[in-house]
Amino acid sequence: MEKFEAEDKDFEVLFSEKDIQQRVNELAQDISTDYSEDSDNPLLLLGVLKGATPFLVDLSRRIDHPNLLIDYIGVSSYGSETSSSREPKITLDAKIPLNGKNVIIVEDIVDTGYSIAMLLDILNAKKPKSLKVCSFLSKPGKREVEVPIDYLGFEIDPLWVQGYGLDTDEKGRNWGYIAYKK
Ligand code: IMP
Ligand code: MG
Image (cartoon, rainbow, N blue to C red; front, side, top):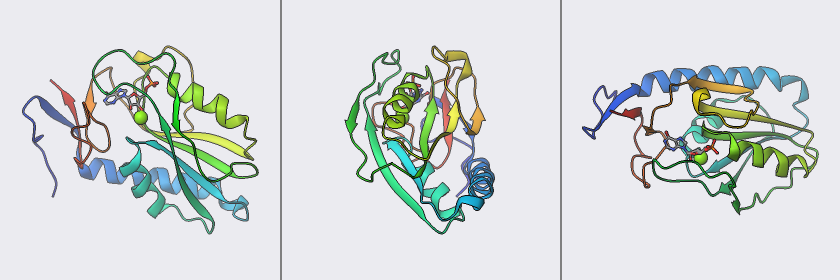
């Protein structure tokens, strides 16, 4: 059901479930088109745990590709509204080998950029055929290190957001909408 009011009174809805699903459709179409001429090679969606899981599931079901693979990677980052870690670490490695595959890192949000910068370094060393970044949200105003985002859902102001995978101390990941802290 479409929610216009966040179920936590400290939060205000920023993107409704409908906004989100519409944007996911568009991103999936862009990705399907971009990889249509290389459909013999596997396209691996590599979701960053845990925040990217709802986005990755929705996206993967709408991408049209005959050889779509899914894997996950764990990265330590902060769970509260404290400052982001300058040295994020891999806490769980991907299982599927990346070499020779077209890989898209799927993230919930790019904030300072440290997590994506670290992932690009580590994953490029595994010699994928190509490596791109898809993030549902980005806060350019918070960036400390420049990173490429090849597919982006929405740019937002430097707000604290929760929902659609994004959490505050593990809470709110299950919301179908995204809300910001008032
Ligand atoms: P970065 O390394 O600073 O870009 O951090 C990215 C990670 O921080 C994201 O994958 C999220 O897990 C977390 N994060 C950043 N901003 C928010 C937010 O507003 N709400 C919830 N998590 C956030
Ligand atoms: Mg994350």
